[in-house]
Image (cartoon, rainbow, N blue to C red; front, side, top):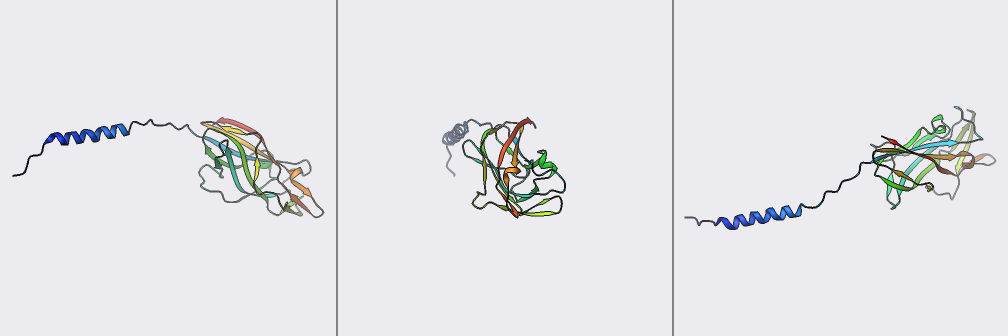
Length: 197
């Protein structure tokens, strides 16, 4: 004959487990705000080099980051679905560059204030003027690889697209030498516009 089990200790153990689980699941659920879309566009301008299809200044973008006020860094990739940035080349004298429609990158971003943009841009080694004059372009030695643009800062908002236009002043960037140009990137944020997504 098997001994009879007393049902009261089993019920007490089940009640204890239920109360323990109920007590441990009473933490508040934190809601996360909807992200916004951060879009970085490029604009180049020059009073000395006319805009023309025969003028080419290839630049290579190797890094693009937005830095929040708490120093957290947000990598900006070519599009919101990218998982990494490969170096990409573009023509700084292209019509898209001259009218700010060249997009360097996009990323979904939390609502936050960003104090700095970090950009690494290098010349590809030459500039073509008038379709036939190839002139060497060298990066100035000792110039940092990463350019930090700090003024003005900008904010991203929940559910909105924040478009930041980075401008490159070619008259100050391209320093004329005897037989070449030296390249020292002089960039600033020319506009920040937020629109609904």
